Length: 160
Image 1 (cartoon, rainbow, N blue to C red):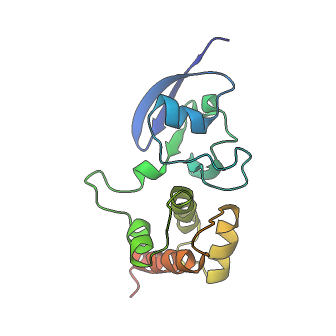
Image 2: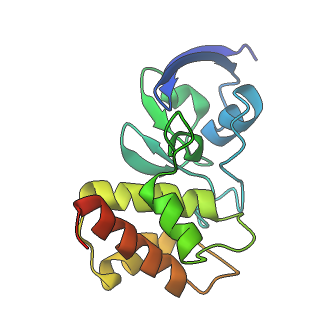
């Protein structure tokens, strides 16, 4: 089967790659572009480890074909920090609150949290828990994650 030429923007940079028509966006990111932050936890869209933003919409990259990125913007965990290495407030708050352990689910949770705060900059605890329900973490128990997201939201709004 012939490969398809894909032109897209990933983390603000224009990129091109050749994709098998059946290749997932997750595989294209990891294998074609070397962006290994997104993980494959289940391959069925149930765990959230592969979460990315596609034109600002939160998606499970294991359920999206790589060719579907044509002409779109893809944001991954690698694009969360500033170009100079300055951590995004979510990343800093996850560290401060010890909201991660093994780190396998963390990239997807951070991307999902960014999508939440873009939509709702002042979420309640219930809203954070509901939004992150599609992200499974087997290590932390979620409380520290929720506190970190709420704390980052407050900082990003300029609240004390």
